[in-house]
Image 1: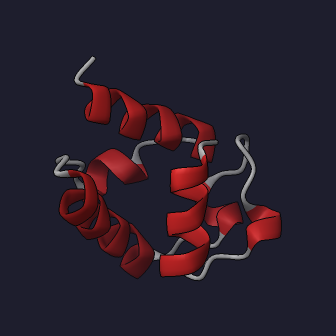
Image 2 (image 1 turned 135 degrees about the vertical axis):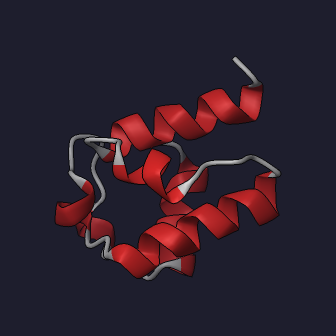
Length: 76
Protein backbone atom coordinates (compact mmCIF):
# COMPACT_ATOMS: atom_id res chain seq x y z
CA UNK A 1 0.00 0.00 0.00
CA UNK A 2 1.34 3.45 -0.85
CA UNK A 3 2.27 5.93 1.83
CA UNK A 4 -0.32 8.42 0.55
CA UNK A 5 -3.20 6.04 1.20
CA UNK A 6 -1.80 4.98 4.55
CA UNK A 7 -1.53 8.63 5.66
CA UNK A 8 -5.09 9.36 4.56
CA UNK A 9 -6.43 6.33 6.38
CA UNK A 10 -4.54 6.98 9.61
CA UNK A 11 -4.37 10.79 9.75
CA UNK A 12 -7.67 11.80 8.17
CA UNK A 13 -9.95 8.83 8.80
CA UNK A 14 -8.30 7.82 12.10
CA UNK A 15 -8.21 4.12 11.20
CA UNK A 16 -5.88 1.91 13.28
CA UNK A 17 -2.47 1.62 11.58
CA UNK A 18 -1.98 -1.96 12.75
CA UNK A 19 -5.04 -3.05 10.71
CA UNK A 20 -3.86 -1.48 7.44
CA UNK A 21 -2.32 -4.24 5.36
CA UNK A 22 -2.62 -4.90 1.63
CA UNK A 23 -4.72 -8.00 2.20
CA UNK A 24 -7.03 -6.48 4.85
CA UNK A 25 -10.69 -6.14 3.94
CA UNK A 26 -12.31 -2.75 4.40
CA UNK A 27 -14.28 -4.11 7.36
CA UNK A 28 -11.13 -5.50 9.00
CA UNK A 29 -9.38 -2.15 8.49
CA UNK A 30 -12.16 -0.38 10.39
CA UNK A 31 -14.15 1.17 7.55
CA UNK A 32 -17.77 2.04 8.16
CA UNK A 33 -20.18 3.76 5.78
CA UNK A 34 -19.06 7.22 6.93
CA UNK A 35 -15.37 6.38 6.32
CA UNK A 36 -16.23 5.28 2.76
CA UNK A 37 -17.97 8.59 2.03
CA UNK A 38 -15.17 10.60 3.67
CA UNK A 39 -12.52 8.78 1.64
CA UNK A 40 -14.38 9.42 -1.59
CA UNK A 41 -14.58 13.15 -0.81
CA UNK A 42 -10.93 13.33 0.29
CA UNK A 43 -9.73 11.67 -2.92
CA UNK A 44 -11.73 14.11 -5.02
CA UNK A 45 -10.50 17.13 -3.06
CA UNK A 46 -6.85 16.10 -2.83
CA UNK A 47 -6.23 14.41 -6.15
CA UNK A 48 -9.11 15.50 -8.36
CA UNK A 49 -10.09 11.91 -9.05
CA UNK A 50 -13.61 10.58 -9.11
CA UNK A 51 -13.92 7.42 -7.04
CA UNK A 52 -17.47 6.77 -5.90
CA UNK A 53 -18.58 5.21 -2.65
CA UNK A 54 -19.55 2.11 -4.63
CA UNK A 55 -16.10 1.94 -6.26
CA UNK A 56 -14.58 1.89 -2.78
CA UNK A 57 -17.07 -0.64 -1.39
CA UNK A 58 -16.48 -2.96 -4.35
CA UNK A 59 -12.78 -3.39 -3.56
CA UNK A 60 -12.13 -6.57 -1.63
CA UNK A 61 -8.88 -5.45 0.02
CA UNK A 62 -6.90 -2.33 0.82
CA UNK A 63 -4.37 -3.44 -1.79
CA UNK A 64 -7.10 -3.41 -4.44
CA UNK A 65 -8.28 -0.01 -3.22
CA UNK A 66 -4.73 1.32 -3.49
CA UNK A 67 -4.46 -0.04 -7.04
CA UNK A 68 -7.78 1.60 -7.98
CA UNK A 69 -6.60 4.95 -6.62
CA UNK A 70 -3.23 4.67 -8.36
CA UNK A 71 -4.91 3.75 -11.66
CA UNK A 72 -7.28 6.72 -11.43
CA UNK A 73 -4.44 9.10 -10.53
CA UNK A 74 -2.26 8.01 -13.44
CA UNK A 75 -5.14 7.73 -15.90
CA UNK A 76 -4.30 4.14 -16.85
